[in-house]
Amino acid sequence: MPHLLILSKHATNYQSLIQAVNLPDLTMFATQDVAEAENYASDCELVFGEPSLVGQVMEEMPRLRWVQSTWAGIEPLLAACRDRGVILTNVRGVYGPLMSEYVFGYLLAIERSILPRWQAQQARVWDESSPGTLQSKLLGLLGVGSIGAYLARTARAFGMHVYGYTRQSEDCPEVEQYFHAGEKLAFARELDYLVCTLPGTAHTRGLVDEEMLKALPAHAWLVNIGRGSSVDEQALVPALNSGRLAGAVLDVFQEEPLPYDHPLWSTPNTFVTAHTAARNYPPDIAALFIENYRRYLKGERMIGLVSYEQGY
Image (cartoon, rainbow, N blue to C red; front, side, top):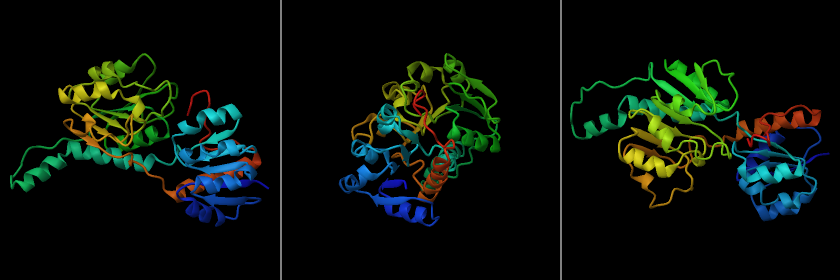
């Protein structure tokens, strides 16, 4: 009978959601405390939880066979799971709708001048200037995984054109043109919006560098909802300060929380949010674990299976 350790700040909620479906042959221990988890760890072959917590108890789990992360990002677990030959799955398929709300909330605010209109209202100014529109604008997706594909569908619903930059996949029908390694400057040159959804790997670190920022049109905006490591912040700040780039919407950073004295807090036309574009929704995360558990018992390919060769 498999033993499962649930180690998460939502442990009680996850336990209730899993118990409600009466999974076969499963014994569960649930806690949000690492020290308490160590009391159960040696008996468990399965663990379900946040990588930042799970990574602290893996050495106490000699029977471990499968880790289900509650995050899309699995960097804290990657090396340890790879070295031990453990199955590692993440939740990369559940964030598309929330990420889409975040990205297009800001894109609409930018195009429709929502903040300037509100400022004009406060000053009692009748502002009759024409707003922009998303129609026919060009959205570039840096990364066309499950989140990028969802964003592409939303963009097409607004009448936008969509380009994609990816290492290999070309299976999203909403992407009109694909670019690959060595083509990132050609990819950037015509974009109105560059949206970065990349995972944090050696291949993506610093991909949005000074050269790429210079290739973007001056009216373009950068939106980063992937990993802070993919953007060279030392190159981004002067690009924003000089007006070489129109603006940025940033939810992730190289250091989090963003330090109090970091220049991105006050660069022009920059919106900063605290890694909140898509927070975990426990029913969706639990549903994914439940499906994967059933596949685990049958020996079937699991959803969100991490490739150790690709690092995500």
